[in-house]
Image 1 (cartoon, rainbow, N blue to C red):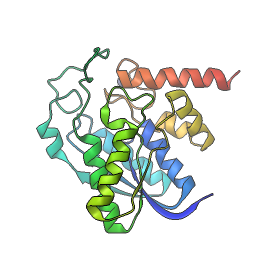
Image 2: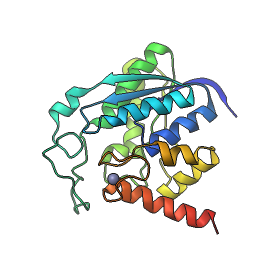
Image 3: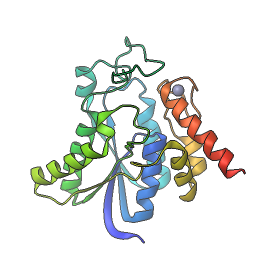
Image 4: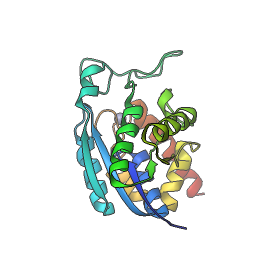
Length: 220
Ligand code: ZN
């Protein structure tokens, strides 16, 4: 059942947020997308997100958060930082951008407030959360409360992927009828390679392992 309400989706052009965009289109009568430019090495992300929004027929806006890239030193925003091939025990991966999801959702909420939109959608997942603390359910719930207090609002942050692993996420894309779009037209790879990606970086490994598990189950 579609709710007669509006939703704003945080869209980065990757598998997760693209699946969330189509999830939102199924559940809400009006959907818009917001994308952030934060000094990420692969500016292509923004173009990919724009194309995905256009194809889905939703309004797209880009917010400039280059300050975040200037302030942080990690493998996604700083060309001199070499990405960890494997996650180090007891340490955040060096692809972690501190404050990123908090800032994205906070700015998305400001935009939503101005547009009279109550629902926010983000593709974070605790199941395959790569060690990012700001992808956890407790953080999202906490921020939801804070945003409501800060703006005296009744925002609802939706996290359709929170308890799905990557295999289940491919299944969701398939159920939504967008398996091919998600597989071929998104950019998840940390090295900026479209679709199935470079195959080497942690994001590609996670995405591919889930895809292979899902395809072998589907084709049985
Ligand atoms: Zn890759």
